[in-house]
Image (cartoon, rainbow, N blue to C red; front, side, top):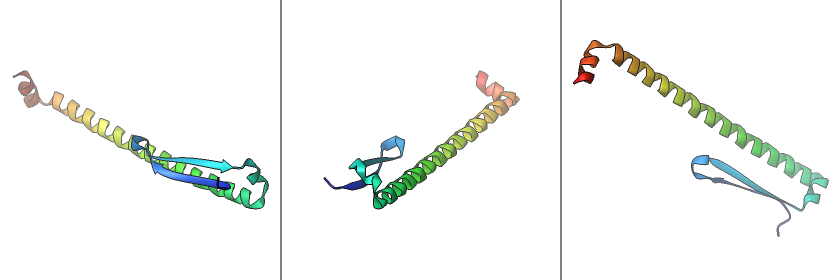
Amino acid sequence: MKEGISCKRHRDGLKGISEWCHIEPIELVHTAQGRLQLQALVREVSASLEEEVRNLAQNAREKIVLKQRLFLQQEHNSSDPSSLSLNMS
């Protein structure tokens, strides 16, 4: 088995980008190189999580805007006398 830290990034369907990491052996963090590798890994995973949070926030904002537009359109249609006659027929 390869000694050190290995990471793989992959697409996971609707869940977006996922990370899995394997650290072997655990004593690796007691060496200077191991600590540097671990710090790099933490930075990479943190950046990935920040990107995912930004994407989720953007998706949420887009959904809110769409729901607001739909609500305003329905409100406008219900107050429009011509749309009432179309709905009754």
